[in-house]
Image (cartoon, rainbow, N blue to C red):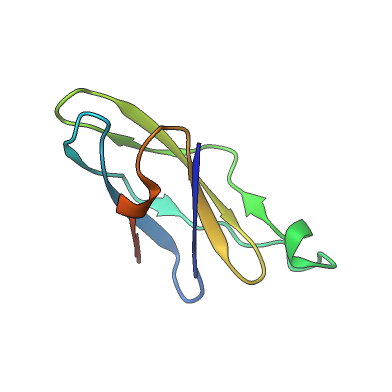
Length: 94
């Protein structure tokens, strides 16, 4: 599992670009950034995640990646259930 943080403020969604396990470049569909729980007492308790993931599918090998977005008071992060290089993930905020 890979988790990578980003700053969601002023944005409503993200599109990810990364290298598949086969080496092909993959672009995800657009994923909406959920609103954080602003009633929480601290940042750790403020993270919200949509119930359903968004996806990225490799055109070369048909590998399917489930992606979740967690949004908190001060930051957000994406989570991908895959064995890919975290340093090669580009998070494009929209």
